[in-house]
Image (cartoon, rainbow over all chains, first blue to last red; front, top):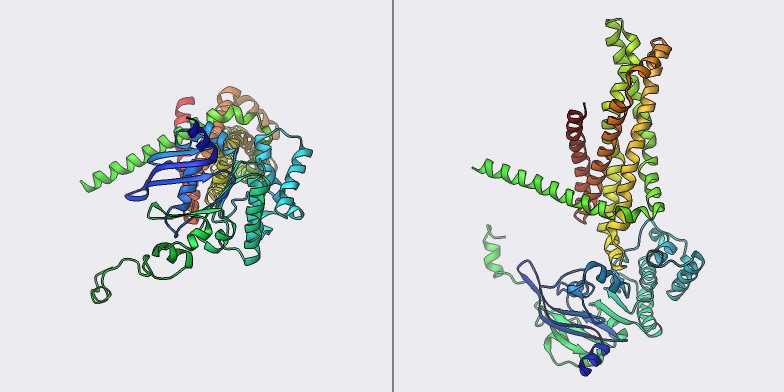
Length: 275
Length: 256
């Protein structure tokens, strides 16, 4: 029991024996993942391996077929809606596209969770919102509308909104996709700074090896529904496995073939009926 | 056999949709008391849904009333009973045309706006984002809009009827020189508050529930793609029109 308690304390998230199917396809089959408290953990893998699905399972947006998903001591798939919402107040989630409310200004977007979940006076809400915007460097943009923001700015506003309620855990879904190098650098820095200064646990889902390696404390590499490798960025860099090397170095051919499985090219070209 | 099977699936599909819509309605009604505690959200939507439809409703009401006045005058003058024009216009509007036409216009103006707004919020992950912030989009977005629609419809019908009567008055009294006294006196004598006014009022509430329910249902369950939202918007107009006309027959059969 004592070791159990200690284990729970060390890991914010523990996933054991996760199985998840979509149609006939097994997305995960016996996946085990542990996310240590206070660290930045990355979940990497090629597109279509279900990284985002894994985030959705951790946050209760998707239900697994089998397996335990313990988040902050609670088994997520077994929670009622109210219990799940209670748990989510401890979570921040950064969507790939920001998912800002397009009809609300930047200020109202960040104020939204505060207005919904607290009864703070307007003056205090104003202070908190401006402080959160200051943390992401966008205090000056408080009265802009989401349509007036660049992609990178929108993501920073979404980040300010995600930390508005001072969560314990923050999830980033592909935070680096589609950003210019400067915005990318800003997000990388913010992930690290916010994690350490607010005492968060950060989970990043991404396939941008370089950026992830610069910010994460350790990474999981997932492919075909299983963990292929786990370790610090340096350990993964030095990993001997051909698959890990192909992924980390971005080689076009290797254990993951360049070609999608297909019949012989001669046969397919000569056979006019074939699709 | 093929035709029979196809019909079986069509009927099954319709029943399934009716069932899903009914369940959604129960869901909305359950959260209504909670939503009433935040009236500001509802008032805002009454403005978006109701007030923004006012010009359309008033202009349409005026023309419908004017047409009623003209057609009524032409027919009644054959029997030398143009004095009854007021009754004809008032009863047509209160019992049938007011609620039905307002509901059809409403589903085209406000229903489509509701469907596409909620559908697009879903497609752009705004509803998902809300859920991740531990806010239930049904309670926060859908229920206030539903209540606002149910509040707006009887008000819009009332305004449509009033402007329609004015239209009938303008054509009948000002243009065709029907006696003003008999125009209003006939209305006063022959329009029954319970029978005519209340039945129209009940119709407007039922139509308000039906059209708004269809609009928010289609938006909330739209496929989260551009094509999905456009299809849902079309379904809102088509299904609302069918629902309004079918319900109108049912209610008329029951109440008169």
